[in-house]
Length: 385
Image 1 (tube, one colour):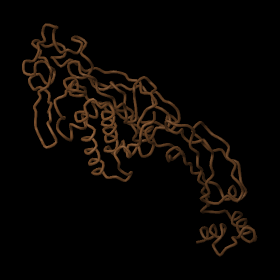
Image 2 (cartoon, rainbow, N blue to C red; image 1 turned 180 degrees about the vertical axis):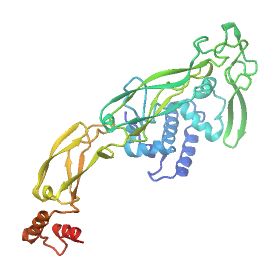
Image 3 (cartoon, rainbow, N blue to C red; image 1 turned 90 degrees about the vertical axis):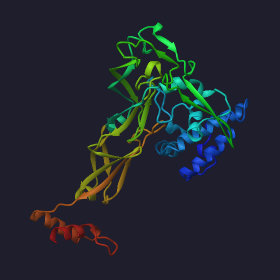
Image 4 (cartoon, rainbow, N blue to C red; image 1 turned 45 degrees about the horizontal axis):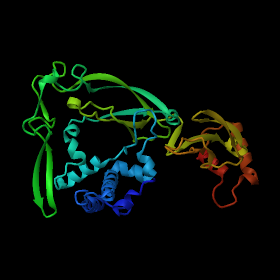
């Protein structure tokens, strides 16, 4: 089933401002919140859908990718076993509830559904890590796997992440009764709100440690250097990023690990400039090559090819080698190699060369048909100025 357009979901246009998007989200989130529509699965799905649309359109980076590539721009190709994506990732009810709580500070009623039921574990989630990888255009032209070393928190090898010296060293928190949460109820014109916050006595864990693990000091994690394989799909661009789920820092005391964010950077190329999938190469011809035509060797990503330059080629002309550009990200086909022609005009001439140019200038078929100065007149002006 294909996803609906995010702008359509929020009922805003593609030129909508951040305020427009925020107002639309607030209205729809209140309308479809499951605590106002209990037992209505359709409302729950719409609530999640509205949250997902807002999470993308309120983020400048994600919105730019979505505007350019649609839903495909927010998803990875699913290869490499790393669960990576281009900033989109999976979006569940807990994510939608989290966004709602940022706006309204809680939830309707007293239900303990979705994200709130796992607040302690969410509180312990490890931090995301961020690195940059520089790629050549040759690497970008095909699937590339990079091995990178990162220093990060991993689960403690002594206590397996519990933070306790032994099982008997853990006791239920008396302040929260083991839930890891403290709940307060507030009433407003919108209804009853339940504010859920981590228990300060146990730091949201639901239990307290009586005797800490000697290796990690009760944190449940230690630092170590790990090697991660990053598989990068062909066609990526500068500034795009891949998310490797679970490859960030381990969470405290058994909490979920964070993600590893890999930001793509492009190395400057010796020959080519890039515009999306197309590559540009500047080719300089001599006067005689441009006038008579020639066959010349030019670079491409895979090596070199012969290019036929027709006679009478003018400065500024563009020649195209089809499908010699870069692959389309998450799509089919390739861009083109555009060759921009410039003419090399000598600044100094031998006596014989001057005579030959003057002879050419005297021929009728070397002169322009309009009042504009001709090619050889321009050369003459430059040589004898």
